[in-house]
Length: 96
Image 1: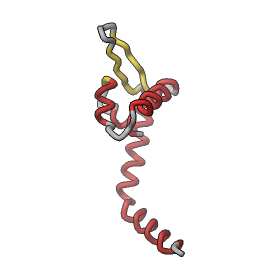
Image 2: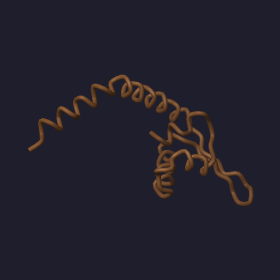
Image 3: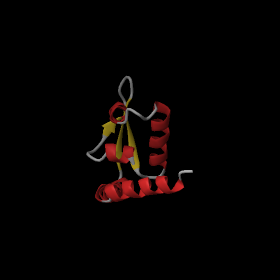
Image 4: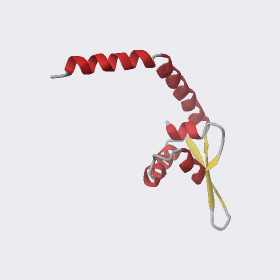
């Protein structure tokens, strides 16, 4: 979801995506981008420069997923207090 959200405004170079997600390792980011490309969620473009530049852009399928992510995010914000309360209640009830 983080990568999808990072690409919400359009195409970004790898380094820009990496900077937007500082807690994600380079290996994890590379694997995630490959998996999203393989799944048809994003498009990878290589520019014939030296060194080669690569950017990533959401496809129509990825943009549809972004809409769902935004709905889920809104739901989480709306119910955040309830979720925290339930977690605290659960923690109290399971203490030994």
